[in-house]
Length: 524
Image (tube, rainbow, N blue to C red; front, side):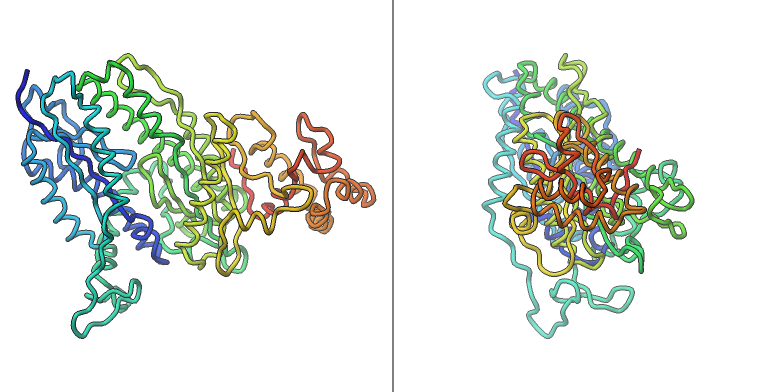
């Protein structure tokens, strides 16, 4: 038995939503997301490499070295799911690492908060205390610190100072157009070239077709035609439980098997998310007659699309409002098409593909971005509840079209605008991929495409039908017959009456489709 006392260290970030999405400048948002990534990835690698012998290079490449038997000073176990897990030869090295990394974050990303916790591992092969259990205990401590921490208060002006025009904090300089900026905004501006490089590495030119992504919200909408922006927030389903199920295998009581297994799982998540992002990028840069999806024109060399958060199971991107729900649906389908592989040596084998949920907020291009993101996050949670209610491992999506003015909670919006005495006007959220039920993308897509075709000659009747829906199924049936337009609705398989009255149980089948007619691209 080795009597060396090791140390497990877990690193996480805190207050990310405000730090990343609190600005209305797209470049600031892009850079802030990159800085969060650097704090838990690149800067971790650089610090480990600078402090001693480790298993990862400063650029993030793994080598074959192991803490034992190679007598490393540190080993990166994995980085993913919001956590970076490290193993140190002794507690003093863990403390030194935390000091160096904290200073780097303070200097390079002022305003970004990191949370760190350490736990001792008394022996490498102690059957009473496995690395698996030590890691889980340390993650629990990190989460407790995140939610119980004393929130930091920025140091305001203590003498004669000028205010940053973006944050209200004391200004430390000027940006390129002469506006006063704080240390936080200055750091984000300086980090933008690195953020661009990171995106280039994630989506190389072969996938981008030499197109540039939007870096300004004015490049996203189409002036005098469709000045709408879509914010899509996507998150993997039950990732914490999946990890727990994987490491519950008795084989993971062996520390090296545990490391190989959880590292391989984390890497497979990154690969699946990366391939899904590249897949939707191909659709964005592809165009027919100069239009994305045959709808959104490409002007010059800039496409109206920008990934903001990417690299793991948590993804956020912005795009032209007309592309939002179509791209989110395609991302979910692509994500579920890649199998997740744990460490083959552990005999755990291939794992079920990852499912996820998405929330898409479609707002005016100059809508306060923090509110737009919050709406997308609420819609993602709505899809999560829907998945739980269905009791299956499936993907789902919810969306909402918002105009101007303050936003209510999505539950209140649905109660006020979509609830009638006959039931719900909306069929959202919808299932993506599997067709286990009628509330699916396939149903929504079929109804919407039929209305788009009929709308070429009967647009006024379709708009009238939308209002009639509030009066219930019998009113819809009467309108279609008296108006001589029964062909406006198509049947939902298994529910033949829906073609006649447009309702299934307590849900209207066509209201969402009419609302989305100007925002529908069904990428193939």
